Amino acid sequence: MLLLLAAQVLYLYRGQAVEIGFIAAAFKSLGYTPPQIHSTEMIALTNRVFTHVEGQEGLYRLQLGLMNHASRRQPFPLIEVSLTDTQGVIQARNQFHARDYLPSSVVMSQMAPDEEHVISFVMKSSAADVSGFMLDFF
Image (cartoon, rainbow, N blue to C red; front, side, top):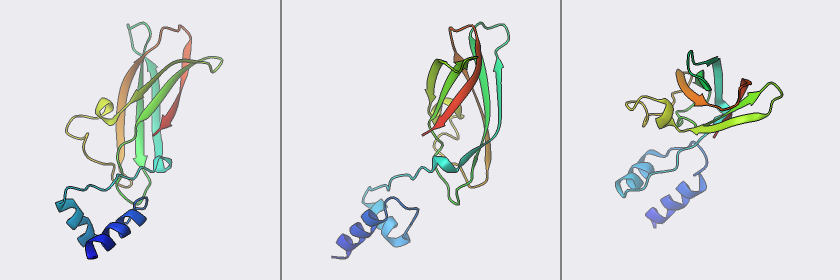
């Protein structure tokens, strides 16, 4: 009965950052891992630099500073980058998982509250007039 009650409590609070120590430990020993909570609206850009890669036609480098303003740790986001031309028309789009922009030693970690992470990645576009970018976090 207690195990059933514990399961109901975990199910009820599954979308919240609530951790009940002994219940979480009991379920972890049974192989259950609670879902990770993403609060992408709490991730802020602290800086951004968009440049053409010198000597490489159609390659662009994007460097971002990310900060987690949530009060708890959370997974690194999936980042969707759209390269745009001078009219704002999307010329290229790509998604980057944490494994694409983090060193392998950091990929499995999470963003700590108020800790900045500087990341960088390269994108390719066949359009000649790429002048900007748009970001979405998932």
